[in-house]
Amino acid sequence: MAQQFKPAQPVKTSSPAKPQAKQADTRPAYFIFDRSNYRLFIISIAVVAFGFILMSGTTDIYSTTKIVLAPLVVLAGFALGFFAIFKKPEKVD
Image 1 (spheres, rainbow, N blue to C red):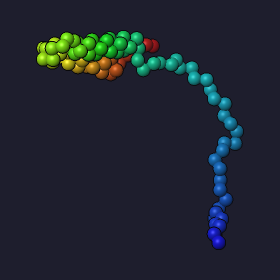
Image 2: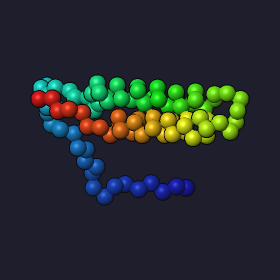
Image 3: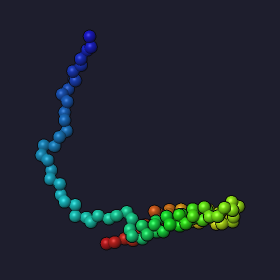
Image 4: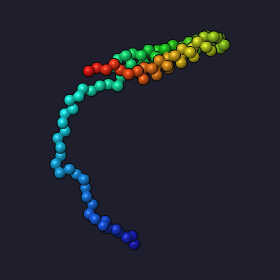
């Protein structure tokens, strides 16, 4: 037969006696990114896509465009994307 234990002290609940009315937040909402961040990010996506198009190129596997230029363009697009993410937006007061 299982034993049942009773608490030594009564259990207290922590509910407020009177619910407090929330005050309206009067501060304006700010976004993390502004228009320039989004613009740079869209440009970086286009640069990466262009790099992949250069990589697909012609049937010549050992082309300088496919081996050297296209990977550099893709890396530049990724770098621009990181810059777009980490760029601080201009402060608006």
